[in-house]
Image (cartoon, rainbow, N blue to C red; front, side, top):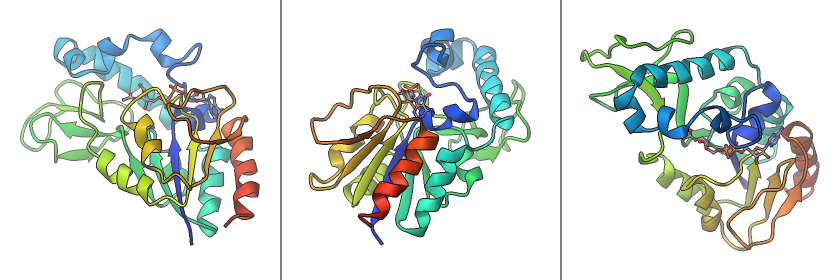
Length: 229
Ligand code: OAD
């Protein structure tokens, strides 16, 4: 089976009702990144940071996977699928995809502020000041904030290098290092992009564009990929 590497962003979860970041009405229009998604914000106002992610988690618990997520599960019948996601939601998991790498962390997990190896599932939607790890330190959201290292990027780069087919779905390709993964995909490998809007990928290689929302776009992708499997 061929290696199908798929990079997803907030757009794949849009049809599940979760807000994207950079579109009109997106999260970064409503909130200032530096106030809620940086280590400095956590130091300055941890309550606000926790509230921001609690709201995201609450929305996530009320959401369900959409046809886009389910379509990627179907592709596992034909390809060795690896999903590299920038999303912190768990909709790929809940849809049934089996090989997922989270680049920016996971919303439904918390992590110790004194020992980053201590990661826990969050029961329900709330994480609060006073919630402690087994060593007695405050727990923080298990999210990669702006200005922090992306621990899984090396694994993602190796995946990109091994791609036989590379697919990009629902990401504005504005955030590095994730957006740079395309540079590691071998030149002869076909690249597909699903997005209803125009996006500027920082690469001049040929890309087959499916200008549709993820639900319909993934169905179209499946039709095209089955012919080259
Ligand atoms: P963005 O909000 O930057 O981009 C979302 C993309 O999804 C845009 O290109 C939209 O056109 C597209 N889109 C919208 N609706 C769609 C649909 N129904 N189907 C398919 N695509 C659709 O989100 P990301 O690129 O994921 O990081 O953002 C990258 C990172 O920036 C996030 O992981 C997050 C954010 O700050 C952290 O919080 C660390």
